[in-house]
Image (cartoon, rainbow, N blue to C red; front, side):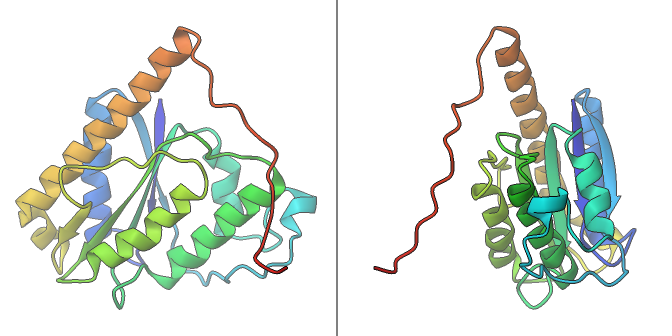
Length: 210
């Protein structure tokens, strides 16, 4: 079992990374392999809506998005982390996730369906729940079970050291990790006794124009 954690912060070793590292450490203790993927600081364009991914199987813009898509299918669960910028996720991870999930949907790869996902956010003070609501929408449109903790998945602090002092927040990162590991183990046990994934139906597209 492997979980891919994505750091959407421009700071490689900042507050978001500190929270993700606590999750990774706990997952490892539960026997789950982990890797942290850095979105990085290079410019990330938003989705062009060109639909080229349906023809070439990946995003037409060749950057970190395609690097992620090339490895994402090898993982059983996902954690996406972002700092709070203006009560929302960072522009980088928003562009990243828009294109990741759009290319996944239109390329027909279906890398994420029925795999657990969760979002965690870090903030100095406020805007956390709005950011979590924003990020969770990527999971609910892709048939991904959302893993929760005992509280909303957030940590507070202006520096990594301050985040470490957020004892409740860091505890919730560990609880979240154990819940993720439990879900993965349940799925693995189910597969061993022949429980199949839900039946898929061909997508029907409608709008409200009559």
